[in-house]
Image (cartoon, rainbow, N blue to C red; front, top):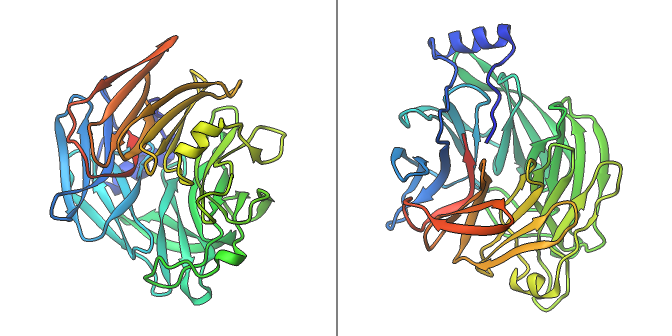
Amino acid sequence: MRRRAFLGLGSAVLAASALGGWKLVSHGEQPLLVSARDDADGNHYAVGYRLDGSKVFATQVKERCHDVVPHPTLPMAVFVGRRPSRESYLIDTRDGRLLQTLASPADRHFYGHGVFHKDGEWFYSTDNDTRDAGRGVLGVYRWQDGQLQRVAEHSTHGIGPHQLLWMPDGETLVVANGGIRTEADSRVMMNLNAMEPSLVLMRRDGSLISKEQLPEQMNSVRHLAVASDGTVVSGQQYEGEPTDVVPLLAIKRPGQPFQHFPLGDAQRQMMNQYTASLAVHSELRLLALTAPRGNRFFIWDLDSTELLLDTPLADCAGVGATQNGFVVTSGQGRCRLYDCRHGSISAEALALPAGLWDNHLRLA
């Protein structure tokens, strides 16, 4: 997966100095897969593996993590605490050394996702304001004195924010506000009859650009993928009746409203009202989605919306785009690589540990 090779010269020098003289990353031929993973005893780990199965690190952490956010150029990543965690972890991706434990403020908790700004100096996380349960907060951190320090926060203009990503300009954020209120240290949903899910575009100074909603009030907007042309795809988790007919994918193409992505009825039913991780391959114009409750993995043509792959995959978890296609982890089975370059899609099992992977992965 392509990564920026350089920061702006001034920022790069400052960042390298703050990191004790670390050099800019040379990623080599084989990407590093970073993800959260448990062991059979329920212990939580931040892990990094090469795709050939070689382990780079497995660092035990106190709280379960969800998404992972690699730094744009330096060998570190934030493993973001899973809702309603009060800790996230900054890890050295060369050897797994714990560089910093990020503790949420007393009246906040993490919602599982974050992003680094392209200059590497700023980090943003989605948080819950527990004084006003569910009010979405964007935590703003700055790299200062060798640490990520919380310096500000902004509203996410919604309730229960989950994933956030950058639009192609690198300055506009897209935020999936799940619409569900939860209290401190709880995953209990308080407002199922009054949910307010939304897709928000906002500037990183906190100002709102747009806020859009789907017709289904109980269709929680959760996870995102963004293509290089600015197409945004969102995966939903439906909190209503299991028998309700509800589309679980939505798309916002440039200049168009946020609307349902066409789904075949068979695929919708197999998702069991729940989607997990999404990835877009911008070069191949493909969209991939994991549906762990239905044990299915899907790939579509992003432009024509044609379904290209619908395959069983036990408790499929995270998905990430590689040069050739997609890597997918599994909570119960083997990790797989799907090669999408040659018309038909082929799959091969990877020599990575099987099972117990969390719902997200990143390739650094």
